[in-house]
Length: 393
Image (cartoon, rainbow, N blue to C red; front, side, top):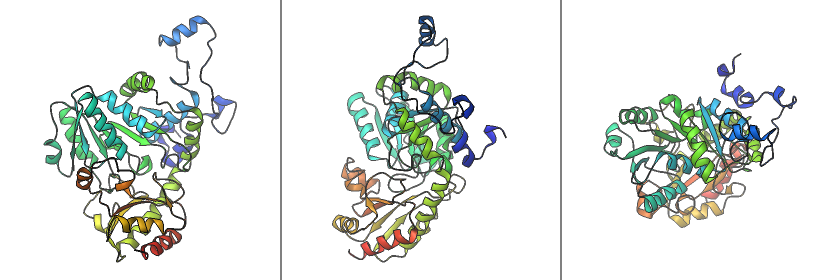
């Protein structure tokens, strides 16, 4: 079987690595080195001049990191992948590479709080403006595009409201204007959604989440066209320096092997919890792809399943939301998502606290909104913990 023909369940285990190249080691080795030696001075000259392939310095390339980059590129059906020290290092490197002073970025109406913070900094320091669009119709996208729009940046599902955006529609419109589309695919992973196949140009991941899967590593990944990522590698990645360590790359390679199995369990649990919450008298709304309250969003061709994250709103106040969180027994109050443990947080005061209140409310991030990352535990235990905590408000 050709590697290109492998199903994703096989590719997450095998792509990018051949044990024969590493003395038969089943697991990719960790090349825990900062620099690499040259056989001769002339070889060093050739490598720095780009005339000979080979490793120079781990900030510029590392064998363990390369395996990871090739594997994520394969999973996303991309020409090249790049690994970073964090999801925000990945996002920052891409957006800085795509823009210059006085450019404009069009964003989905709802973003991770730190991405919003980065956009605010770019506007304040470099006059790189941004606008938000709900992106629910072609007109809602076209009316926000400007002559200076350098890229369109999309989250789908949006964090934390779980709204979905039609990526093919966005990509088709963007191509008319020759504008690249960047998609944060963290919530879905390439197992559930592949934006490049829908016409988008660049995909970013906080690999800290589902790709790592075990809550023990901070990392980011980017995939896209080779020419663009070659440029990023030699500019914003190299010079800003958000470089992943070989050990963290190895942790991601380990975690990725079980990604499909884990994602199916995350989805199973989230689907069951979403259905139960929809019928609870203290819950005013539940946000989860393909759930009853979001059934008008037909995204079956875009997403394989709904993912492991859901959000819900309670009847009550911010204090009631905090009371709910404080009465949980084994569900952990923590930001992040995609871990084996079920995690819960209050976006308005935690992950999205940096967003001004009026903007936050426009995004749908109310004081009553709670985000849950369904873990790998028995769904019955997750529900029992939620149910007993809901009884306290």
